[in-house]
Length: 139
Image 1 (tube, rainbow, N blue to C red):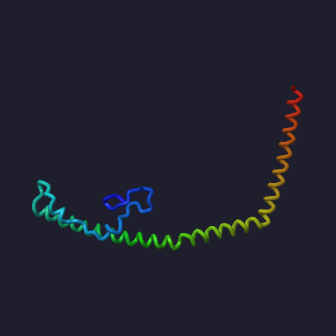
Image 2 (tube, helix red, strand yellow; image 1 turned 180 degrees about the vertical axis):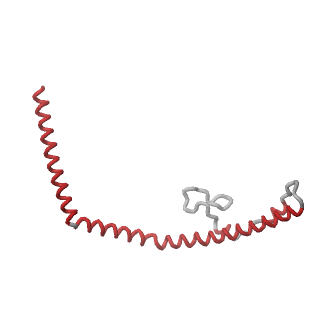
Image 3 (tube, one colour; image 1 turned 135 degrees about the vertical axis):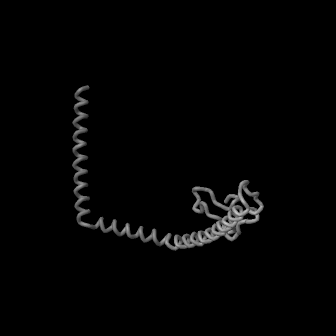
């Protein structure tokens, strides 16, 4: 994590997440009060902007807390689903593949392809022998 408390590593599973220690830290409103006002603002405008700033900072803190809770729940759900979901999928695929292998259509297709492969191999062997003979004759 960097010094601001956020993980900025884009490959990290925690990217953009604030550390738990940062979740309950209130935004420092004293800094905003010490910042000099922009020239050209009236006192009323400045006060209105400060009030809005405080409200937005409070909303940010709330949103960080809600987000942290949602991310924890997401992690819990993924841990619960992780091995069992992938294991179920693997078993389902294995079962389906076994069903295909024992089906009569698969067996007929396998036999046909095997015969076609044998005939193709024999034909290529014959062609190769004929070419070899011709090359031998040409020498």
